[in-house]
Amino acid sequence: MDIERLCTIVVDAGFNLHKDIGPGLLESAYETMLAAKLGAIGLKVDRQMPIDLLYDGVAIPNAFRLDLLIDDCLIIEIKSTEATLPVHAKQVVTYLRLMGLTHGFVMNFGTPTFKEGVRRLLNEPSRFVSSCLRVNKSGHAR
Image (cartoon, rainbow, N blue to C red):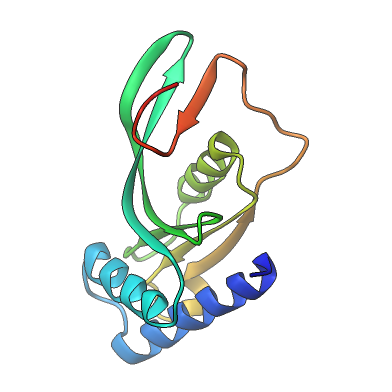
């Protein structure tokens, strides 16, 4: 599926979830419900995917976890706070860069409206990952 179409589907699902439920639940509840909505329409959804790093010869198992990885190409970081902070965007951009992916979102379900809480993030092609840092989605550092 085209990445732009996938982004539209995911944002629409997030919007409808926020509209139906509203703010106030834990992140894990929104993550579970969004994953179920996306899975029900046939998308591949990985939840809490552990990612290992290899940095300068040092293996770091489970260095971070992706809240949602959609169709192996779109990262969704779920939040449920009053405001989305700059660090949340930086977190997603770092994940994108380390994994060699281009598109991600922070979806904060704690804001009064979904529009206030959703932020699309892109991995800039000019950025690079140091040759001493690599990730492996399969659960093993390389």
